[in-house]
Image 1 (tube, one colour):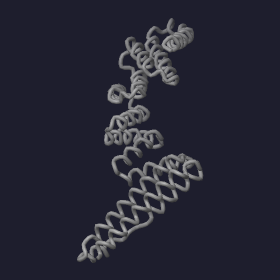
Image 2: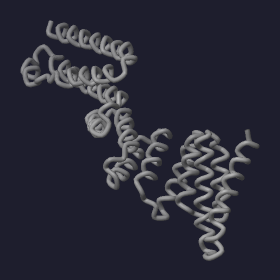
Image 3: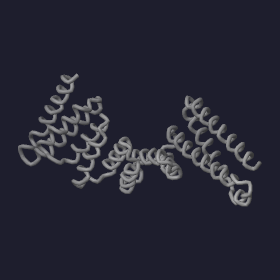
Length: 260
């Protein structure tokens, strides 16, 4: 396999060399940008073939000629992230950003690496910066939505998935994730209702709570959208709703028990 990717790099370099030779002769400084472009292209090609270690090595090799090039740093970060080396990938993205390459793509990829590394708040912050530059950046919205869901920030997660679905209404996975967030919101509402009726003498507290069934019904609507788009999801989502219904029954039983 190593021979294959070495031959692949060699082929890319030969083709690029022919295409750049005339320009380099007229403008020697063009060599640096040419090396960076070729190195980035070669590393990206290796990534597409899932040769991640080779891609990182290729980016490193080109960086010996063009240090701190943001394109090379970003593609190396992508290769490291694919290997599960998320902390190292974040370092590469940060270095790319310090060079002035503060584009949404770099920030979005940094956010994804941070999420994979377990830094969910950092992931959301990076994605927020990406979205400030490009509000339609779908990878940033997906990472921010997933991170918010994991953090229990369900209202925020719903907001991110709404933005995804505005751009991609046929995204079944986004409908499911939005439905999951709404299910968690409905569970929180039931817990609040149970707490309101926990004390027998606290009837006034119970009457001050107004349960809102919209979250649960909206979740069902989201799941129905997902099933319409991908019928294979039906068994999984049906199991989810059955489990959710069992929790509702348990909550009602607890309330009745507390009321005596």
